[in-house]
Length: 223
Length: 241
Image 1 (spheres, rainbow over the protein chains, first blue to last red):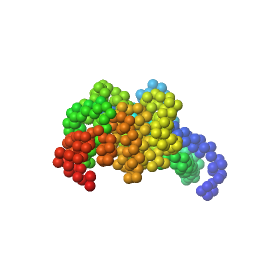
Image 2 (image 1 turned 90 degrees about the vertical axis):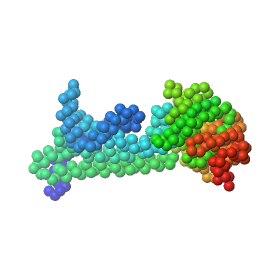
Image 3 (image 1 turned 120 degrees about the vertical axis):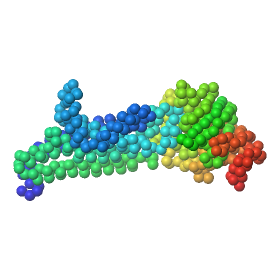
Image 4 (image 1 turned 180 degrees about the horizontal axis):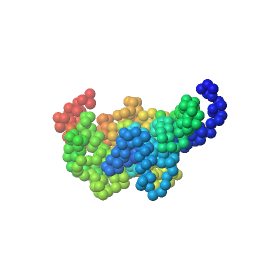
């Protein structure tokens, strides 16, 4: 017995393995598509178009001001009412996660873009570049470097937050740990292993990010 | 070449430029002086619409650039600008800094743009810096490169916004030398500066601004030796100690 109970893990490791796969894929697609939507939202928020700006601001505020659990239920029960096609549980869960993530990513990107000195935009415009060209060649490449670490962090946060999708019956790490609790009548061990797995994933990722960041700075021939 | 008609600029309640009327002729080197907060930088920045005028009109070579129907990017190509803080692109090499706009905006091939950039770099004696990044350069080198970056677009007018104010004293000379050479080559220039020596040597006209108005203008000799406006006299007394 004992807390590490190897017999337990030998018998049930497949539950954890599958759960880990689900958690990772929901988080991964959540952050990738969330970033895409986030880029659009941040550009809308930075634009001079009042409608685009208003829509994006409202979206970001509402998402950041309501619990992910509520958003998850709204997507899970609400989307199928309006969609002409069926979506699987896991797809709906991913959509909820990405829509949530997009709002946070949008703010990260906006801050990254605003951190670039306005003289850069002015210099680009004074050379005859359009606003779009200046963004593409001058502002975004410089902002990207500031954004990347924060984006990696967002991915890590998402892995932890995604445990909430277990409540709509998606078989992620958390859900499977809970299932094992029911099967074995042992509440502690499965949750303990679930915690270990989450920790290993996030700890490894944050270390990898650290290395990547240092590389980025070392390979940097400017600043 | 540039006509400025009743130019006004307000930042909220602050009236920074008041009814500026000016005509800048081709080949002129106009030096704008005045105390800080007099509106001289804003005046310069209005000329290529980095600041949008509140009212008034700016006509460059017969085309109104304040007219919303005209493409401001086209007009900006004809006006090079040099900034106090250089504003080189830190993530691009010196060569890329110079060639980016000619390639993207004017549609030059990379070879043409590179060739032109190298000959410009040679002119200021910095061709060996082509592949370095701006952070490895001194302030004076940065500013000289910023000048040829603007020249690479073959502008008709060059605007200088306090180009030597952020430099260490020993680097001011090298930047002024490039500007003087440009002036001698007949470039039309509008220069906001505190370098009175430069104004005397190559300026065709000096404008003194205070409180958002042009208080006095004239040849460098007249304005520096016989200023008529008491404000001009006061200002010159303070800076020409």
